[in-house]
Image 1 (cartoon, rainbow over the protein chains, first blue to last red):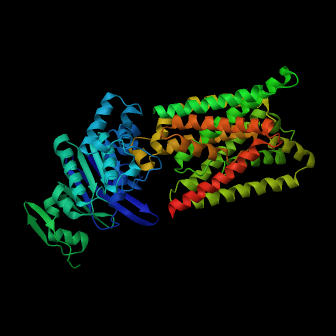
Image 2: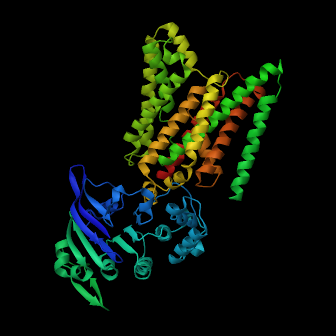
Length: 255
Length: 318
């Protein structure tokens, strides 16, 4: 279980994340949603130690994240940020193999290779595993990075807007894979999403942020309704039910 | 992988041929006199080549660029500043000048501090474009150069002469007692750095990915900055500044060898350095019969290559 306790981060004088307390429930998909600049990515960066918080703490199974050893933490929590520009030329397989670094320190054994093969297959990349990343489309590249995180085989997978640059088909594909990781392998996924319908259809819990604070935190059904969404986005969003999924029809809402 | 090892072998063979040529070609006068002298010069060139390549490749990985090198950012001008300040403030009879080791130690400490400050203010923010960093590097270099000039103008003329002999080190004028010290430092740096090589591979994925994969990023950056300062200090103390060598050999290595592995990259660029230095010196001495130093030629070619890389970069950015 990851507990975020009273965490605050200032950029200059402005608080980007202010006194946020959230508990990430294990074996579930938790989506962070909210308007632009709400502090979702910043929060995720602090949970994953990419960024230091100014106050507050993050606990992983009651242990303070800052006090854990880097490589021990890397075996339990994986993070993928939005921008993934590389200075080096790598093949898909080489990139995914890096996911095993916390275990192998660069010398892959047969078990590591097995994890790499599996991760490639999960993301449907086996055919193009020997291609260089700069030869791939944005979507394929994104899948390669997610595949690296899967190869890392951590209990917690944190993803910052993984659907950026992806078309509908690949977005759905990735969300389904995340669902599978949770349902079949018992992973815990935390994901920052812009499209609330993906959040509604695929996540178990939703944490909504606005101006650096948590405005809503609960099961998906408690949050995807017109009243709660108005509080988050300042928009009147009708919610319709379709085959048991709640779909927000926000395209012609007025605020 | 196999192709890379073939390329490394080819480089090694060329390097060895040049070393043998340099050692034995047209050896006149007493063999006993000339041969040991040539060996010292070869030793200096090999050590310098390895130290500069090693430092440059590590530095470029942690700063995520392929154009800036420790030398271009003014690290070897810092060596001149330290020497000049010592001569100016304490005089040439001071223990800090006479004792080579103490002198060297002072220079290393100053260069490490300089590298840390440089990193803290320029690279840490991670958002300055490369041209700004470059401009800053040039200005810092000029500032240090002017400082050196100023002190040299006001210094006692006798002191100035002995300072000059200290600053204009070259491959023709290698201090053999420093050669042994350099070997020890280089050996220690390799033993210490060996464990870091695979961490550096991960660092080349960028800060976020490296932290995600369990690298203690800030500690790693600190280690690399210290290690590359020591290496650059070693080579500068031994043969004087060769500003553009690191830039040439690292970029030729990146283009010639297709890998992200630092163990391979560092070996390749070290061999390229040795070829450039020993081969270049050989050609200068025996083929062109020019009485110029190799560092002048390397800086000339390196400067042109540097402009080429900048133009390429600006096209890619635009």
